[in-house]
Image (spheres, rainbow, N blue to C red):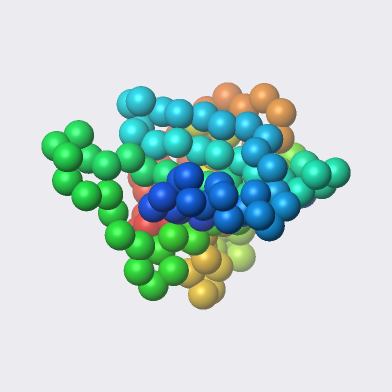
Length: 144
C-alpha cells in the first residue's frame, strides 16, 4: 500500500492556491472536467511530490445557482491509497465487517469509511483490473 493524497473541497480555488503557495506547496498537476463540472489541482511540497494534497473545486451549477457550501468538515474529502489488488483489499475489508460504500465495479476504484466516518479511496495500482463479480454488480451503499 502507498499513500497517494488527501482531498479537500474548496470554494475559492485562487485564494486556496495562494494560501498553499504561501505555505510552500506547489502545483504538480491539474485536471478540469467539463462533464463533471469540477477542477482538481494537486499540490506537493518541493522534493516530496509523492505526498499530495488534492484541491477539488466544484463549479457553480449551470443554472447559475451558488456552489455548495461546506459545513461540518464536508470540505475534507478523503484519504487515498494505491493497492496491489483492489479486489483482494476490498474482500479483506468486507470479511472484517467493513461496508464497501463504492464497490470496485470498474476494477479501479472503491470507497470505504473509517469507524469515524472518514472516507478512504482505494485505487488499483497500475492498470485497472477486468470487472469481476461480486463487485461488478454491487450497488453503492450510503455515502463516501
